[in-house]
Image (tube, rainbow, N blue to C red; front, side, top):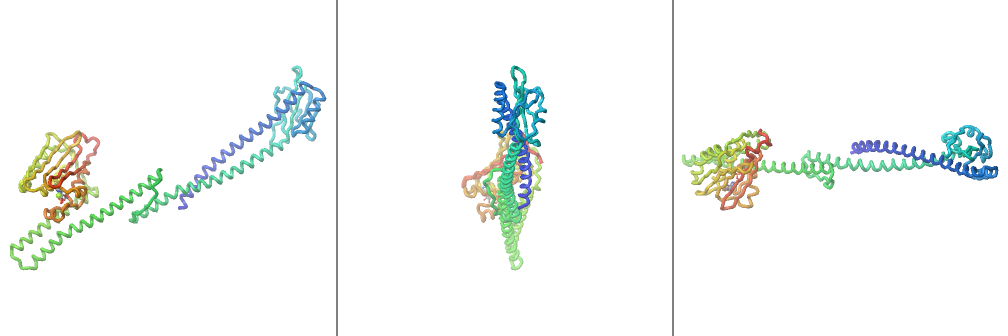
Length: 464
Ligand SMILES: Nc1ncnc2c1ncn2[C@@H]1O[C@H](COP(=O)(O)OP(=O)(O)O)[C@@H](O)[C@H]1O
Ligand SMILES: [Mg+2]
């Protein structure tokens, strides 16, 4: 469990941490720049204010008044004439000459910065010109110690470090929860899949997420329930097969024992041998049907579709089946329009029709009629097999296409049914991409409706 969340956590952290560092540096530089600019601006503005007074009264009194004012403030002023000759100063300790010499004679009206080296120098300074009657008569120098700027920056740095630490801490907490939150459902799903692979389908995964992880959880739950259903179905199917095989074998063994052990008359012996023969036939039918179904399940079943002219096809079916209907005194009618064509595997289609007609014969009483009708509707071909035989009870109808499902086990057994006929029909119809539906009323009759794609509808189908 640790691995995934740690990996995710580290990746998230590195990305967010570098983003944070980048943003903090950028912000810090911008803030320092603007604070320094403010300091210069206010120093210069103060110099300009003194200059304005001095321009009005450029006299020793005013000069000493201005220097007195500055000696109380944390800035300093130096007033010189235009040649740099000192007229007044509030400065006590610093060497100002260097600064005074540095200023050039052509100073803009709003003043300018003389020394901006706040990082290394002890002072920053600005100068403003005193213009009287349009001529520069003197200069006002302003000084400010850089120590105050340094302490300001230091305070700013402290704030940044504190916020940085808090941000990293919060990032870490968020990432721990986030990576755990992401990794946890994945780990649960991994556990669920290993349970499934061990054959335990009772898994429970949270269903309340509507993101990709939720989709994955739903797919896994679906997989588990599908596998559960399939396993169940396979077990039921195996149980049914063994049961179905056992019944004829019991008959065969029983009658074979009788024939072997007892002194039977020739007629009796023949009677039993006929029963044995019938049961063997039933077994071989059953095994043939099972084999067909097994091939369909394995998908190793090849449907060789080709266009079939239904008029021809059903004419042959009619000829083939009529004797069987006549034998049971049943009527049989085929109604097929000229020129109907479907794309199907002829052998499989015949198997489908055979199974349906076989049922109609088995479950109809003499005098009943069976219709086999074909209709072209839009792009589809409808094949209906309708009889007015004994019908299927409503409660059995939903299961009638299931494997081994028979309405009346004992009676249909005497008719030789395996209960696999309709299951095979259904698989074959689906393999053709068609559909099957059944309607029936007890005592009235049964109708199977198959819908296949017609020849015009075949462009979007692959012919295998
Ligand atoms: N045309 C029909 N009329 C009445 N019952 C039918 C008809 N077709 C099928 N059935 C019922 O459906 C059951 C399943 O049919 P099927 O799968 O063909 O098995 P089988 O014919 O081997 O018994 C039959 O046992 C029968 O009870
Ligand atoms: Mg049948």
